[in-house]
Image 1 (cartoon, rainbow, N blue to C red):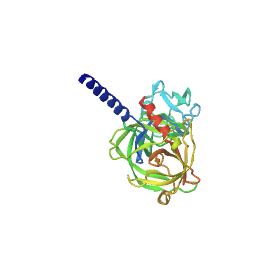
Image 2: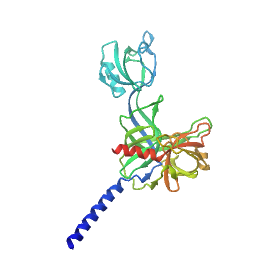
Image 3: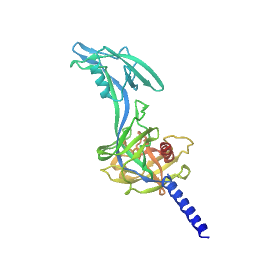
Image 4: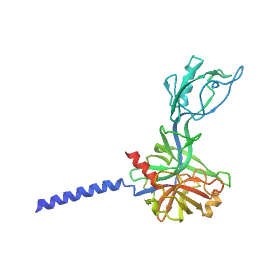
Length: 332
């Protein structure tokens, strides 16, 4: 009898252990965000502009005969892989030829093209292209999971209407110093400064937001249940965001429409800002609020994703379901 009792006790302990391990990874509950965050993301080497090079003999156009377009990603130069603008400039300084061959990605297409190297009036080599190799921006943290994955923004980071593939990046806390108030037809924005210490590593830039691994504690954060789409109702809700310093505040909104979706899309929730304090301070939804969690009846239901610029008290939200799914995929 003692052996039988011991066996059942061991079995019960094993069952409880399994249950605890499953619960620890459950996404039924997440830690609420609302923090103002700074984003520093490597993007690869993208062409974001062209210019004429001023030489001692007047202006010249090194890209005139090339097949280079805005939004192109430069993968290599003369067969040498390029990951940032400094590498590109260093190669041009060491190159003795009058032109180089660029290997370029344009959407789903790959191509090669030649481009001239022109010495400017300071005798420095140039190919006449404005290059961007990272993104700096301000947004809002949406949630953190029990196992320290985070979701933010509620939309992707784009450049020239191209979804930039993420080659790595970091997340930082930021402090909001001032607000540019929104007006009908004019987008407002948070003005904030990033801290120096990274709090997260960005692993994914998706149409539904930025995702990655959080690297600091969540002990002071509120834990909320995650709502399914069919639980969201028209009526009162709140957004959590930061519009001054680091203080997270809740502001009243009214859900005016719920679009039940069977595939990932950004505009699943439509709402109107009803909080007089928020309207007075910001004019409604402004840039930098993207990712602000939306809460209804004690559950997180989505994240602020877009504003109606013509009337900034109206905005859209991403269903939280799609953002949680990205975390599940990251784990796998």
